[in-house]
Every structure is written in C-alpha cells, then in structure tokens.
Length: 144
Image (cartoon, rainbow, N blue to C red; front, side, top):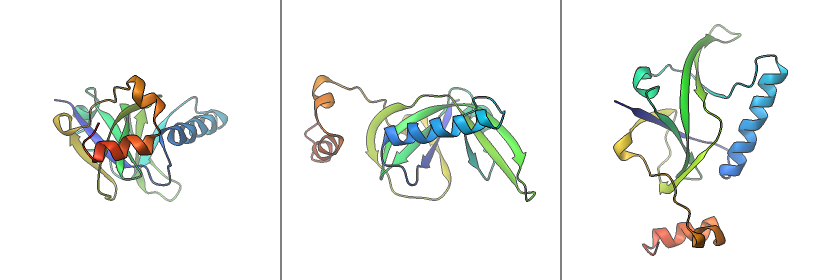
C-alpha cells in the first residue's frame, strides 16, 4: 500500500522558487563529484520506507498550503561530520502542482495517506490567466 510524506518548505515563496533551489542543490552535488543527485535531508529514516517507495511522493507545503508533490525514489541512511545519523529522501526531478489545500504548520514531516492527499492541479484556461493569489481567494470563497 502506497503512503506519502508531507513537509513544510520553509523559506520558499512559490513552486518556481522551490524548483530553483532544487536546481541549485543538484548543481552543488555535481560540483562535489556526486553526480546529479536530488534529495532532501532529514534527521529520521521513515519506518514505512517500503510503502513510500511503492509510488509515494513528498507533498510540499508552501506559504501555508500544499502546492506541489514530488515522487520519492529512494531512501539513504548516512552519518554527518559530527557523527549524527540522517536520512536522504531521494527525489525525482520535477514538481507536480497540486490543488492548494490549506495546512497548519508542524515540525518535521508526517505521513500522508493517498486518500487524504490533494489532487494534482488541473490547470484550465482561466487558471493560466489569473494570479495565484486570486485563484486561492476564489477557492476559499467556494467560487472555484
């Protein structure tokens, strides 16, 4: 059974900004001779790793709303320079926009059942012409 993760993306303004930050991290990994690796570093190894790697994604919360997801392709355990264990959540490049569901802040990551995950965003003609803030306000009012 597939399960997902949900995580706050602190300091990120929007999906494009997250993509730029991730591209920068891939370039740093390449410059360090590690190849084009994209990952998010976290303190704890997920216990439900097999379920995550069975098609699971990490859902990114940006500015209080779940805005994008990214497929998980691996989990790596490692130790930092100070001897502390950590986990690399290996990510597939490319962000998939989701419907911007509101979400309260929390620390770390949480499991997210597929049935509770926001759907991928279906962008219609009108959505492409409206600013993101207007779309959110109209959704909050129940007009979209």
